[in-house]
Length: 242
Figure 1: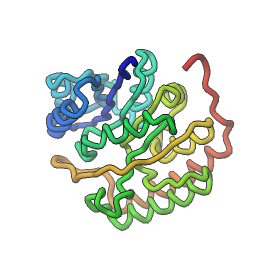
Figure 2 (figure 1 turned 135 degrees about the horizontal axis):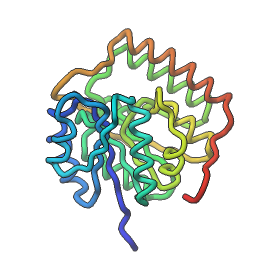
Figure 3 (figure 1 turned 180 degrees about the vertical axis):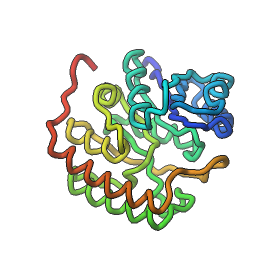
Figure 4 (figure 1 turned 120 degrees about the vertical axis):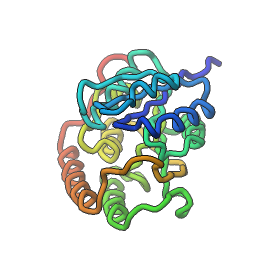
């Protein structure tokens, strides 16, 4: 059996201080995988640090946002024939030992996408999500379950593994504004499947998250509207060969 070609993608904005530890950890867990850092208009040395640690780097011309950056990585993966994409984050909050848990679940063949959930370990996988964010997550859980029928527990997780069908879909269609919850609905409407597996999240060591209590509420309201609007659009259709 031919080994699967795996690409680990890391969107990164000003993560020069977090990348060395993150990249070293990923390389130890999956030494056979290629690593692609999407340098999304960083003003620090994100790109140079990523290259120095053996990663390939796609540098956006300016800060295009998480959705456009991740779609660019899926287009790269699709063009160069990768079998599996693992999406991690450049801030080091997703414990790298979860990568093989995601990939093993994906290779069972039951799902097209496996999302890492911090809420499948009865709190042990989450370092401490704020009450405002938990409220928003619970609302999104309920809405996505109503729209898809799937038992989604972590609708804002940015840690996942994707097979070739999902790679092809997201290379052509990918939400730009609220990619994590919107992509779940997109998968469902395209006829693909998604499962979850437990992962651990850690606090970032350097820098601060841009998400505040007020922004959490604003995000939740906007993403609910985005999901409802997407539900009224035409179903996405894959073009060309997978």
